[in-house]
Length: 413
Image 1 (cartoon, rainbow, N blue to C red):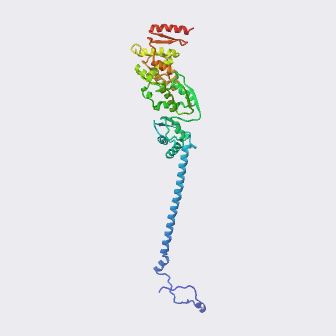
Image 2 (image 1 turned 90 degrees about the vertical axis):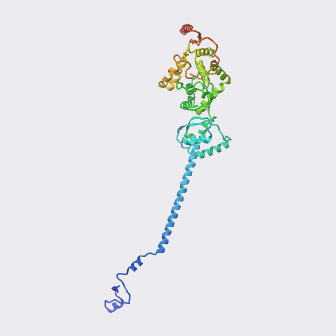
Image 3 (image 1 turned 60 degrees about the vertical axis):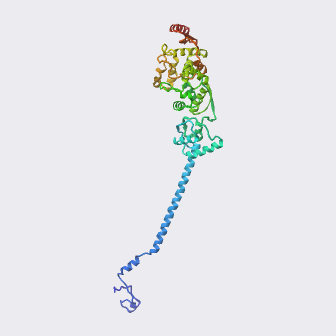
């Protein structure tokens, strides 16, 4: 048995005056067995297990709740972003003034153009835009609008409908301007006037002329020539036009080309073939006639000289017309600069270069075109003018020299 220990004096010992404790038979251990310690330290296993399960369930529920809340917040944010982004595509609210060029192919429909706008970064929600435009088409009874292919400069802050309107073959705008282009104006003069009256910017027009493929047979037949200043010089038909302000470049140029096509009749086409000349060669000749003749009455005479020389290239290889080289110095050089113009001087100098220049030198009117198709029958190979516009014709070089002396006399009066 282990030692006894004292828990103070008992009532009996106090009364008896002794130090012996009052003992009732209890057993005390100063060092309890191991089983006692384990019993004291061992928790309630069942109770603890249930508590842990409860805590785990609470944690799982909290995680699910947080995940649900986060999903709702993210979904709401995403929906808000899509909604705001979609509205921005249509109304262009708070968008930067950013111009981006896109190339629209011929025959593209609304959905295809929306895809192009999306790829170019002009819109963000293409699916919404397609649905929106389908709805607008049904309301406006215009479910299949026609678009004009070409290069376009579109502003990000214009909005979807405005961008699509710029690509339409028939645009709508509040303000228009009436412009007159005289016969014999160069392409460079026409573009300058379009820019001046805010129809379209020069840069946009030049880019469209260079990169857009205009769907006309006569355009497709023009031969590529790197010495030619502008492929469509000669075909921007001189006339009076009504343009929209800020109209797209392709629409403007297309209108001028459509007018040329309307003016070039089957009769003209047959006559050109009879002469063994292409449309481009006839327009080239007509452009020289337009600039060299002092008036319409002289055009058939000037045409006869040009045709006579072209038909005898072995005798008269050069046309020797001042207007062709003047075209580069007066109209081309001021726009493109001396460095670039230098590449055209020799090709357009018909005192040195043989035959026709690489391309027309202006946009001729109907009188000049008809003169090119129906030259007067003569034996003339030379012509010149005095200061009053009188024309002097000659069959031989000696006659031409005699005319030159007469012109000098008149001019010095």
